Image 1 (cartoon, rainbow, N blue to C red):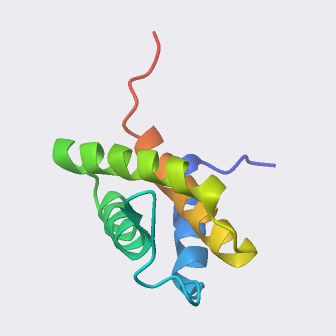
Image 2 (cartoon, rainbow, N blue to C red):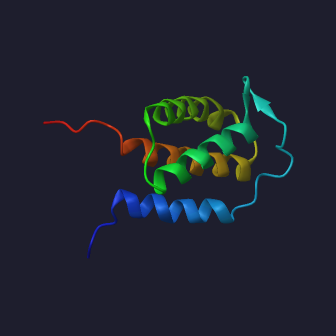
Length: 105
């Protein structure tokens, strides 16, 4: 059996995320200075850009900033659905960012 490639996983997870409803009651909510809906929009745009041909250096930098924000807020979210929504978003961001890590030689 062929093991799924990171690109395949990113595309599949992106489709799953696109079908998910934004967590009810979390519009306009910010946690520790991180506005959740903006974080969602930023990561979505960056993942879409990565899937459509790749990120430039500034996009990669923004993506890493988003990952830092997600790492900060996900453990603090007290709604099971919202926490799973943003955990999936964090996984998406990390899969997209992994494509831009230098390989060890």
